[in-house]
Amino acid sequence: MELIDGNAIAESVLTQIAAEVAKISGRRPAVAFVRVGEDPASVSYVAKKQKTAAQVGMTSRLEIFPESMTQADLLAKIDSLNRDPQVDGILVQSPLPKHMDETAVFNHVHADKDVDGFNTLNIGKLVQEDPSGFVACTPAGIVELIRRSKVETDGRHVVVVGRSLIVGKPVGLLLLQKGLPGNATVTFCHSRTRDLPAIARTADILIAAIGRPRFITADMVKEGSTVIDVGINRVPDGSKKSGYRIVGDVDFDAVAPRTARITPVPGGVGPMTVAMLMSNTLKAWKKRHG
Ligand code: NDP
Image 1 (tube, rainbow, N blue to C red):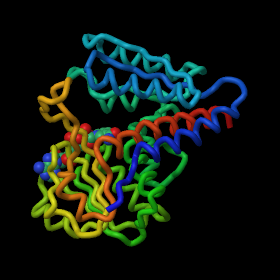
Image 2 (cartoon, helix red, strand yellow):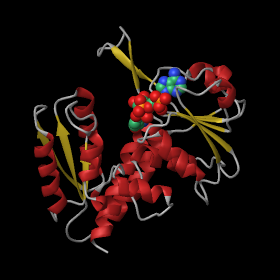
Image 3 (cartoon, rainbow, N blue to C red):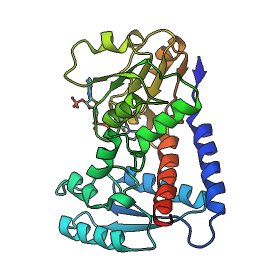
């Protein structure tokens, strides 16, 4: 069994991006983060993204608004970032407060600044296999992990457990695309799937994006397959200062020995998500600077 080291692969992606950014004379790529409220996970995700932006030589700005903000006010703020020539990419951190319609807010970000890839236009481009669009960072990061780990996808059976717009659906569409890494036969599973273990067992590449700790057990995994664990779940752990630890959607200890390759949690897909955000921001800068 080989561990797919997301930290190391993300570092090499970031090193390449930093080298490209260093060659830019004039204004460097800039990303604006928008955070509404003080959700602790969002605070730490945005801080990590800002730190990584600085690491690759990009500039970032953070706009923080109170939980009580109206959706109309948030849309007006996004309008001004859409117009701002100093901003290449805009990322509105999810989750938004319950009184807001996330889809409407994401769609308000200009498609050319939509580094999160959630805008309808960019999702349409993904379906059309148009490379000029932005692909959401987690699915893009998974494909980059697969590419750089030289996992064969051509004609292979990929089973994606999860059908969210943020992870499951786009990662399946990416691996279905004509060309490599792609050309896979893709099956999507979800909460209404009948006999999910039997389907999962036929996967050459199993992608778990469920949000349930250790959902994928050893009996659901084919011997010699590749397992990509997207899950980030907090489980209570009295031995930790924080009182919890992070586990994935895969029962790693039991599953790993059956696999040819597997991603750990943490240190698998997570770091790739941030690296792909930087890649999308550089792409957004290039769109504006020819
Ligand atoms: P969602 O909750 O949006 O989607 C979860 C999917 O899993 C749904 O399609 C749901 O099915 C399916 N599901 C839930 N329970 C079951 C079940 N018992 N059997 C079969 N399918 C089930 O989650 P996300 O896609 O946003 O995230 C998935 C996981 O990935 C989470 O742990 C999240 O924290 C993590 N994540 C990690 C990222 C990273 O950077 N590493 C980034 C984004 C997310 P249905 O549609 O039928 O309800």
